[in-house]
Each structure stands twice: as C-alpha cells, then as structure tokens.
View (cartoon, rainbow over the protein chains, first blue to last red):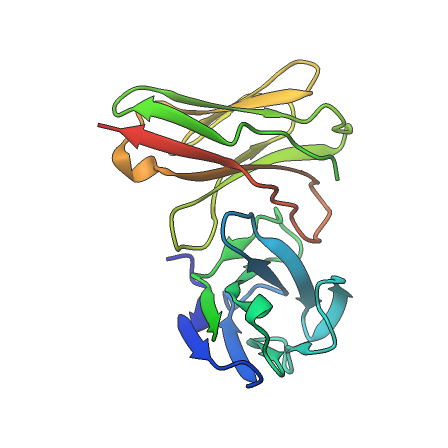
Length: 114
Length: 111
C-alpha cells in the first residue's frame, strides 16, 4: 500500500453513460498524475496537477474527459458519454514537489464499458 | 526524455538471480534511470533509480554501464512473487512531469 487510494476499484457502465473516479494522494504530495492503461500496454500519461493547477494534458484526453483537483488535495476524473474504447485501467499517482520525484501509484480503477 | 528498449519477456528459475536489461542509448547527462514493476492488476511499484553509479536497495541492484547507454536490474534471489512486468524509464531528476512507461519486460519466475 503506497498511501494513494482510488475509488471505485471497478466500474462497469453502459456506453453513453458518464462515470467519475476519485483519487486521494499522499497528503503532503503537491503533484498528482492520471494515467490510462489498456491491456498489454504500459501506462500512458493523461494529465497532471501541481496543487490545484492542471499543468499539462495529453492529447489522449479528449473533450469527453475532464479532471479536477479543486483544493489541491483529492482529484476526480470524469468521462462523459463513455465509449467501449474507454475501457481501461485508470491509474493515479502522486509525488512530492521538492524532493526526489518518484511517483507513488494507487491501485487503479478498472473501467469496463459495455 | 530518452527512450528505452527492453525485451518483451524473460524467464527465471525461483531462487536464481534475475537480470533484466534495458537499452537507453540516447540518454543525456542529467537523466536518471528508474525501474518500476507492475504485478498483475496492481499499480506500478517503484524499485530503484540511479544516475551513473551502481545502486542497491532492499529490493534490487541497478548496474549502469560506464557510457550510461544501458543498464541491468538485478533481483538477486527471484521468488514467485517477483513475477511482474518491469519497466525501465529514463527521466531528468528535476523533470516533474510524466513518466513514459513503454511496454516493459514480463518476468516469469518459475518454480
């Protein structure tokens, strides 16, 4: 257990529905990252925050995806109008700002879109 | 950040040393080599990182060649629980941005 938690761990939804995932990072970590991982591939970067500011978004993050970190603590990732291609593991990681930038990963949320 | 090349899979007998290679021929002087692993259905787990000197911790050893163009992660006594995908990543130490994971090496530890 790295101290990063994600909720839910599993989500099954029907195509066209909206889903929201939550990530709680290690409390003193300023940076928070979202990655997506499909079967047989390594994690791919989606976006990251420094405190509440979203500093970078991948081109993988289409208009249907939105991420927030309103008070610089927990973060949410929302997918609107889900598609079958959104089925993946969504991973959250956090890291401290001014020390060795090792990233600590949560257990992930596995999304299945039917 | 420099790209890395790893073999897609490797086998290792339980109790023996597992040596996982990584090529990073375009690494620059201020870039570190990180190793993470991912056990099935879990998030990636940090193992070790280094710049140019060999490093050792309770999990593994990292051997970086003198020209820094390749490295080897060594698990000294592999157990069945070490079966996982191992990722070699190169990144600047003070680059707080994303990691590029690639496809990694699937290590199969066999009894």
